[in-house]
Length: 255
Length: 215
Image (tube, rainbow over all chains, first blue to last red; front, top):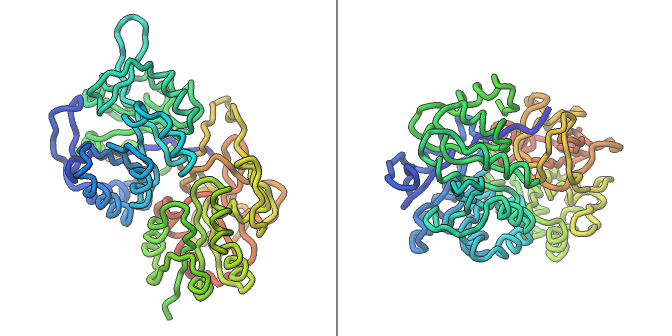
């Protein structure tokens, strides 16, 4: 008996519709988030993540409504993020039915938000999302990016993960910008490095193209959960196929 | 006659998920409230809990929910505690520097050890977050139709050790053996979240909705 590794379909939502970008640009419509979330709930997904990429405050009300509707029909954990800036944003998302909230850019500009929200709502619902890129300067180091991957921060990724865990983050959602949308597999080096460094769970994200990429993220990468979008949205694989493959590879999975 | 389920609302966390799951499990009359009269008039009570235990207990006591709960338990109303709700029912928790809890069950809630690892040396992360198997230690009407070692969704950093108590109804294994469920008389409580545990969780809630409070 042991804790199962989690498979998490990710819904990138823009103006209330699920989309999936290619390296954060060039977006293809994949449908209605409520319908898709319900489908994944029934298909055996372990959790659902919804990232609101609209990132403009005036559109936020659509997100709260979407979260409410998903939460009333989905009986697995729901993580929501995108544009979260304040404790009030977090409270509103939790009240709308999110189980966990991801903080990304706001954590970079105001690390204290992580501490404050973890104290107020509990570490278990505070996920720090990190968009990272390899520096390719021979140092083997990775840099953290803000604003949905648009701005370099000069912050080194592993140190940042440690700092966030120390401030009270309950989980890290690690996205490799180099791999995102490429279908070339997760960046296993940085996934392993961060997973080995922090004591909180790490979710690998960015680059899944095959079922073996999921396996590699959990074994070589040492991740506690794997997140994927397009392979599931466009029907390349079902969640059940992914689970069967991982079970065959002797990875503990909830069947 | 339609039965009314009261979900105890003492301001800690989102209760919509619990309400939605109860409706999905077959409850047609669910009331989310802290009002003593309304809670005591209900046929069943769900006692959820999210967040830090000190704040939870402070709010419970401020709203007199602890007294209401005690009255309801003494009357024999079936009660279902969830997560921090379950932990609040114990004698004590070591969270927040040590907090006295409501004392419906004997036991002290403690933190998972630091540098915690599995038998084979795999590092175990804290929070214990995700789907784990629940071994049904003792028979209980609420386990009806749920397979032994079925998966349920957990998320917590503190736990009740599953030893030395005859009220442990199920356990989980995470480097240490923890209590997944406790039960005594008309009270049943789980460390995991049935409202987030898909079919197994909904089945457990459905069982609670027809439970007569005996075991």
